[in-house]
Length: 131
Image (tube, rainbow, N blue to C red; front, top):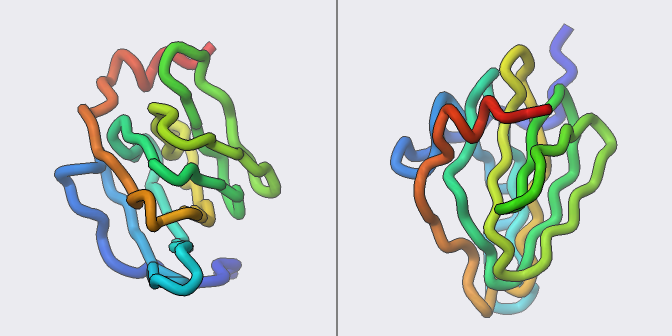
């Protein structure tokens, strides 16, 4: 039984993601709302690069088990129903755990400040450092 709320969308660019990730914009950015909302599906082990959001970001876990890490802090699990508030300009990454797909809604507010600043890839060593 398919329990997905939204279709998969487009495959995310390999330049900014490791593994297979699908992104569907639910609310494209505009100058009235200054907010972008997307549904993101990570296949097992998939993740995005380290990055920041000048306006901050909110992640809402909707399915599966994922990872989230702020630079210099331990990896946290994200599950269905979890909400992660990421302040502006905090370096972080997120993605699926090794054995599970993970889906989240990504809300990027204050986009007039910029949407995302992509940085280096998350290494396998960093990814596998979950304790």
